[in-house]
View 1 (cartoon, rainbow, N blue to C red):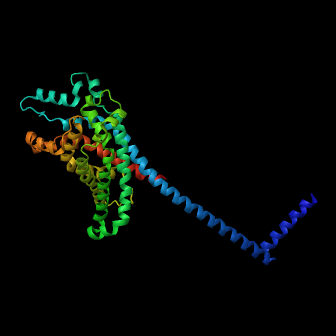
View 2 (view 1 turned 90 degrees about the vertical axis):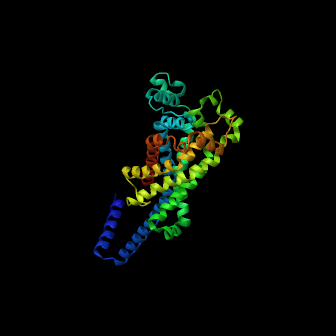
Length: 355
């Protein structure tokens, strides 16, 4: 106890001397030591924060793009697969559906085309008939959205670092970034042909399910092989301008609203920009989309070239057939693209800021 009391008294004496200035040398030593400790702690903290910031930001941005695009694909699939089925069946139909002066015949024709074998059954059977090829549709749609909506910002950033200054000098500070965004979308659209086999099987399941009946996925890929890439040239010709218009229209609309690439848009702003891009994209790509869909709809054993389809289409149905299904596509499929693009953009921005 005496030893402890002596130690306490000595401590009080040192503190008293330091506080009263009786021992300036000791006070200076303590101040310097404390300063060195503070500087060391600050430097360590700054290093840790800087390292964490780089890692989290880099990983967060990549994960945000993948996660946001995946959510978009799943949401679109669950809500719009039946709509896509209806559009595909209308585009592959080569007969005239509307009969002047006969509403009953017109309705019957649409029922036969849209619901196929289920056209004479009940409502529940008709609804179920609009969900063919869901497994192919799920694989294709989710991979497509992750690749397209998640990949375009990556390509855009690369092109911006390489050609951003030149684009702004040639097209101006507002139009330059729009051109970069549109071109990046076009590049991504061309690369999308890698997923063409899944798209082809989805289209066949929606429009000609008898071609797949009783066959497994492995059997189809093993026997059909490269034939699943039939129409790849027409798909590239459709995707390049279509994706250019989608991302370019979206970027132009945001520029018009005063939103830069680094700013986070509201739900309404994302929806408006997506609507502009989707409308342009669908309209530009529609003629080539009709040709691509008819190529994919042909039986495996009876292919038909795109040139032959174009010739027969013009001869038998007229030039207006290139835009067959455009109105229902804009009214029904358009909102699907607007929905998925809006979800993707907003979720990517959200997860990026969150991380």
